[in-house]
Amino acid sequence: MRRLDSFPNGAYIFDLDGTLFDTEMVWRAAIRRMLKRYGAQYYLELHQRMMGCSEDACIRMMQSAFPDNLPQGEEALPQLREERHRCFREMRVEKGIQLMPGVAEFLRTCANEQIPLAVATSAKREDALYALNEVRIRRAFRVIVTGDEVQKPKPEPDIYLEAAKQLGVDPNACTAYEDGERGFQSALAAGMTTVFIWDERFHSSPPRDAKHIVRRIDALLA
Image (cartoon, rainbow, N blue to C red; front, side, top):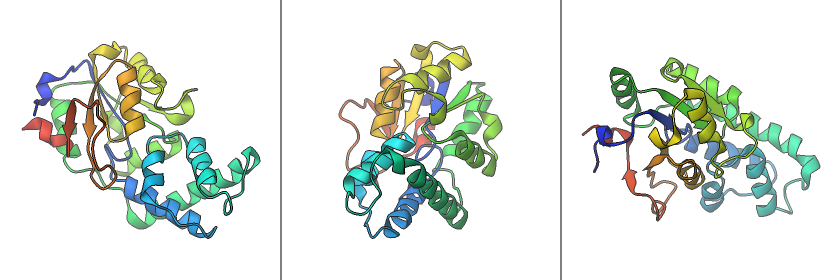
């Protein structure tokens, strides 16, 4: 296992859900609640495919998976988008927001080392800021780029390139931290060294091209 100080530290750029926050289970419960209202049953493979996707891409996947249950077509997107948000916010209140194991210590180390930090998340800005403020780590990040602020979502590199641009750091000097396949490919395409946070609840194995794999982020501090 490589130590943290062996990775490029021009800046560290983090995904949000599943990387900084243990919110993938919240999302899973929220989508299950949403689909239950349509008589559809959520399943793990669909959740895995949606991890790191843009909002509308997730909805289109659900429409494709449940053509006989969900309203179909682009005209149904606003309704399904609102229902998805409402269910997520309900579950977020019920379950709360928790940091992933080791994140607090990891961020303290980054602050001590004066490493610039950014967030690059497919989440909407409103939801990202709510979560960051809820656990009081918003000030740790100089830059926050969200899915509604870039044209091309993950796995395209746009969101990571934009984060590096706003930080004023060459992407090749950045290390990205991701828990999803699409986000992992996005950061790689941006030219960043990428650490995959492997959560076995959602992935039976890491991506084949992942060179740096940890089960919890503070393992890099050992």
